[in-house]
Image (cartoon, rainbow, N blue to C red):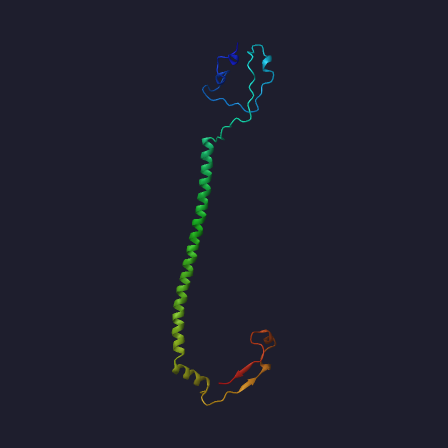
Length: 168
């Protein structure tokens, strides 16, 4: 009698195994037709796996896990480096904008001083006398209508319409 057909041997240990003491898995599609035809058959029924047998969970080798973890770590590090580079460029742009704002504030201070100097009454009188202007007190302004003094495109500008100039 062969080792495979010995009724005293457990099914797991029957036959020649490459790795003893390891669990043997039988798929659900295994069917041995005409198993009772063999010469040393002991009359045991053929194994037919039922469809409701729970399958083992999907197993992944350690090497595959390490490779997947390394790939995920590489992708995450590339995303982090990209984000850090963007953050650095945004910081530089912000610093440039801040420096430009500081320069504009200094320029505004200088321009305000120049405007205050130009608005002084003595400066205004000097500029008016240099241009030949007279004081507007006691003078009646005369309104004039001068449509021919505008170019042809003036009809499409914001100041189109009745143009009135007054003399001060």
